[in-house]
Image 1 (cartoon, rainbow, N blue to C red):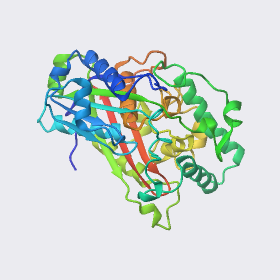
Image 2: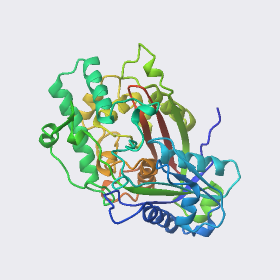
Image 3: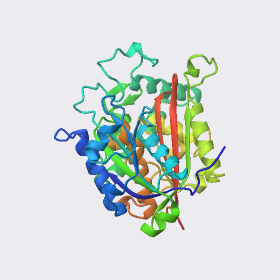
Length: 394
């Protein structure tokens, strides 16, 4: 298997605030993110040779982005891969540059959920849910099954388990309170999280991410060009993607604790980047915390925690801003919400800023290597897991 390590560089990024943008359409969000990225890279839309447009909304075509950004006949490709859609746009744009086909390209992800008619992320009431090869269980219920199974598998006391989940929410809300682009910028207490109204037991209100609108964008080129554009360009160290094909419905040994897509995508990314001990070598990670239990399971599947020991690490503060491995430094999905097409690039945006030392009050000291991760689907059937690793150029 080949490696993309150090073959492409990120020279500009942009990200809107993720929020209930009742006064903006998807075109407004896309333009805002793109033009922040253009300004960051000191380029114009005329310099872009090709673009990848990530959105789950089936009504948005590739040429729609061209209309938004006034592109003149350049190749534009719309991609969709569930919750990994933004990561997929970035991945494909990187491959195009690495191939030598283009010198400067744009990856942009955007989604408008709040007034789109979508009941929640990825659920379209205009299309019968049973008509698709999907689980007939709403996401909170599916991930609640993951939580219950995790608790049973490791024989955890309910109150202590609930406390650990709540500590993850408290951590992410603290980080989100430091981020002006987050949808939710208020800290919460442990008591608030533990006693919050139940959504799908044991997942309460603060265990579940919200629904929002947003967009994020990246300008990608080759390192030899990047060094002529700026000193603090960021290198792509790894791009990995693992897609399940509903194997979990057929496997009697599926334990809802080991998630094969997470394991395979992280191992592939680590191999590309030459990482042997992720907990020690990675300086920060932004992972797919659609629910607090998802983040907890990711800790173990990514090798950040030993199997069954994530609760101990959470209680010891391992993944806080001041901890050994800060995770979801920007507040995560928990504080941003989850506009599907935008989330992957939003996560990459946070890693990019951290590695440049430009994350303001949430800055991780001496950040040199960072990971961004998205997961689409559910743990009870299958999913798609995308891992991006970025590093400083020095």
